[in-house]
Amino acid sequence: NIVGISPDSVVSHKSFAEHYKLPFILLADAQKIALSVYDILEYGKVKRTTFLIRPDGLIAKKYENVNPLGHALQVQGDLEVMGAFLKA
Image (cartoon, rainbow, N blue to C red; front, side):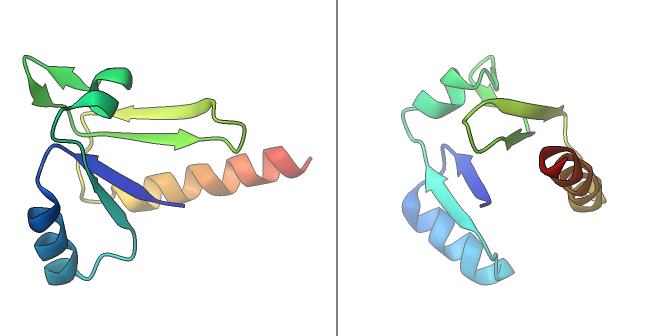
């Protein structure tokens, strides 16, 4: 599953998701609770970060300072490698 989290409002997320036709859920974290737990706040601002989280809840990989251009292909490749590893 893919989930996006940011401190933006539910209304903002809904508009953004519809505009870009996102195929995944966006969660609003106005109090920045999840963002704090995952340690992706710097001086109150969100650091663009991606996590691959295993089925058991452990973080398998963390990508910091993500550049959206090409990032999906990088994650897809890593997921394919991880999937092969988990099946072995």
